[in-house]
Length: 65
Image (cartoon, rainbow, N blue to C red; front, side, top):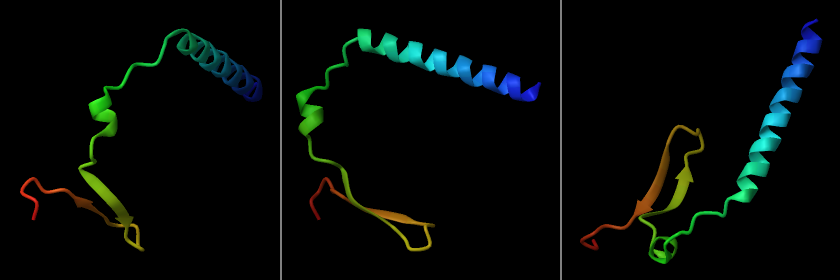
């Protein structure tokens, strides 16, 4: 009984996700402003520590130091 309910649930989710994909194909993607697309990033050179507890990155300072 549980196996049948699980199969029905998976099928229902698959049908729903397929319907959402078909619906999203009808709409065009939103346009991105050229200034936002080509601007300089505020953060770069991301690194994760070997023990995966910390991360670091370089940032651009407004005063340029």
